[in-house]
Length: 257
Length: 220
Image 1 (spheres, chains in turn cyan, yellow):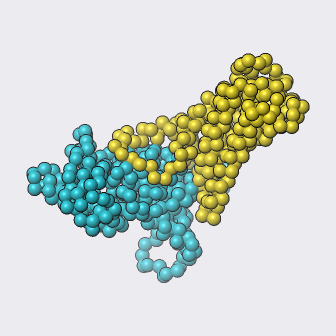
Image 2 (image 1 turned 60 degrees about the horizontal axis):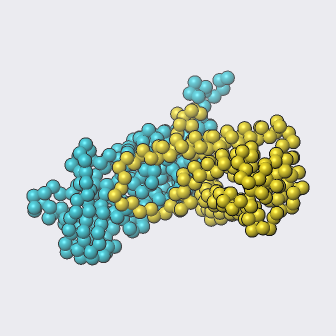
Image 3 (image 1 turned 60 degrees about the vertical axis):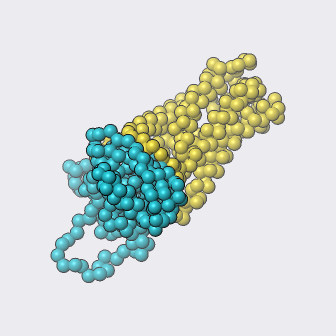
């Protein structure tokens, strides 16, 4: 099939960008979206033009590297699917496809379809970890985890950090990403010692990075390739609220007046 | 970061403040709508209710100050968050298709501003009596104020439109309240949506019944 692409081209973060029209000829419906872009890029290289820059790595939907806005929806029209797992059979011959980078103040465009997602890394650094004793691996089941908690934690842990939630949110909010990380560790016994600090630290860092706030539109969970639930955001809101009121001033240890 | 100031500065904290003040205002409109329905019991019932509300100046002004504070905090939190959300995406998409958001959710900002304008209008109309097209305002005869004003079609229409805006605002707001407070559970999520819709419908239809009945000639 033949498609008309309108792709965002931008040389670097400082340069102005624009949508450029390309014709994609003889696209197989069995290609993935990224393979279609590879074929278009081959053509551009043969003509001596710069290929379209886009992020990608595993191409099997688990690394979180890829992700573009396809006709106005993050990762395109398939639910629960990253851009690399979207196939061209989702489109029809003659379709016009608008391809844009994620748009957010916190995600500056580096080149074409590539944005800087390091704000998500800094949110993780602010609390997305657990401290554990090193040494020999503990025996299995030393720490018991209720089955349902393990399931819920794994659901949240599926987040691949692609940034589609930010891209899809009308407020460019990173609540779903942050909430997935807060939930995934906060649901497990190993995550309890740092639970309060985690919620406070990650939400504070999220705000510092310049993301918007949540207005409960639900666009994020619909765009999410891992279908992370809005329940995680509620859990983060609760953890943040509880942690704020439970926190003691650092100078006031237990027992001091 | 875990200070009261940090909480107020954070996006999550301001949403919680919006949710809590929103709950107070929902409680108020629910009570207000219930009291107003006394109009259907006749002039004496409504006027006695009006006199009861004004019987203690201390209670009246305490309630008014609490409500004014709640409205102030609700609007302050909303405006600062709206500002943040507007600057969070400096370059708009050439094409952006909403996939999930409800109409009610997308109307929260415009509807909220409309309701603010309506509250000012409503206070000038039925509290102070500054606006009284074609009739004489009485500070004691609440019934005659209500009936005379809603016989003016444009005035009745202003109230009906504002209450449709309230319907939309509450249907998203009440549902949102639970999410912001962190009460989201698969077992209760359907009930939460139903509850929000029912509260919004009862309150707004309760209000709308009055101008509609008067405009239709049922009350005179």
